[in-house]
Image (cartoon, rainbow, N blue to C red; front, side):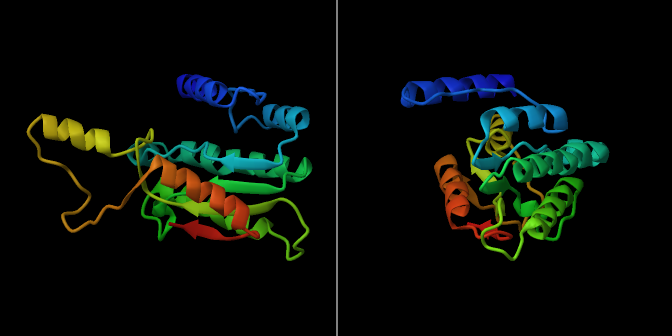
Length: 193
């Protein structure tokens, strides 16, 4: 998402003028490109949120979820091991709990792969951890804009099931959870709010 990347780069440049910022548009399915980036920049921490999340689209094209969410993540994990990343934090989803759709299943596979990568040796790197959450207000995948459009049209608001309870968190809370998981994780954990 080059527009979101550009906006984020500008926001960081304005707020943290002393940092060297490198905004790089890429594809986690391109192992060669990832290898080149890791070789050049030598990251110490990877925050992985580059996954497809739109449930209906992925239900209609499940191979896309496998290619991007699973195989793309494997590319990042392999590069992280090769270039001695210290921490790898993957943003998962509440849909990975007893997955009922392709998106949730692809994210659960990632969690399992990451748990299996952690060595019992506490000095081994990287330490792979996952963070699970659902509805983040103001995020690109937030359900709130859909609810707003439905309300503007006079309703009704559609929900998965009338008895479903939805829990929301703010972007700030989601970012704090991701950072806390990166700091606290010893490897293999799946953190939830």
